[in-house]
Amino acid sequence: MLCRNCSQPIVPIERYTEAGLDYCKDPECIYLCGEKITGVAVVMLHKQGFNVIPIEDARGKNFMDVHGRSF
Image (cartoon, rainbow, N blue to C red; front, top):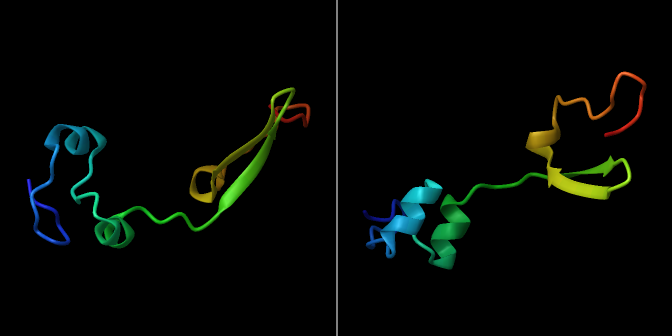
């Protein structure tokens, strides 16, 4: 399999294909082809502290139970 950015062979192929990646580990390729995170959400979990997740995963979700408590 070849990198979609620089057309170099991806080695080791097994680890990248399992992760669903189609680019090599060269820093330039990672910067150009990698998934961009636009922001993070800090969510308070009851008795567990804070959890930081990508804003795309938090958008549209309700992190409160029916009594208004976080879970």
